[in-house]
Length: 167
Image 1 (tube, rainbow, N blue to C red):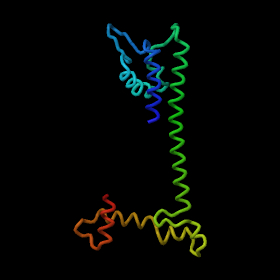
Image 2: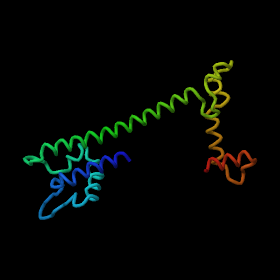
Image 3: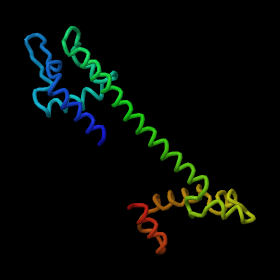
Image 4: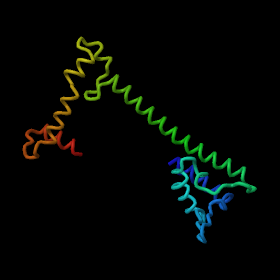
């Protein structure tokens, strides 16, 4: 969402100041990428973000134009803002992954009991996760439920678990 807002702000700047750079004339064909605000926004979302070097990769060179310096600054800031947003998104994902890993190290996800509780007990956290609540046993049971015909589910617990798996 933030990316769309940033692209829209850059689109407004382009539409009012750099629109002439978005028109290509090749072999008597005129391609206007910014004839209105919507086409300009669409062009930035589609071409500007996909271009490896930013929007400057898909536009005409500003060489010799009075707005050359401003256009160069515009292209570079668009490129850096775009990649900063991507890096920030990856950073957030890494933080979430680290948080999940830390939670899995300190709390067993099947029963939700903290590792501190098991450290006080004689059998410990490792014994609990390997013997009492072995993850593989749960996976085998889920596979068994999914492969078993619906008519052979006996007992309320089995039916309830099967319904929970499917939903």
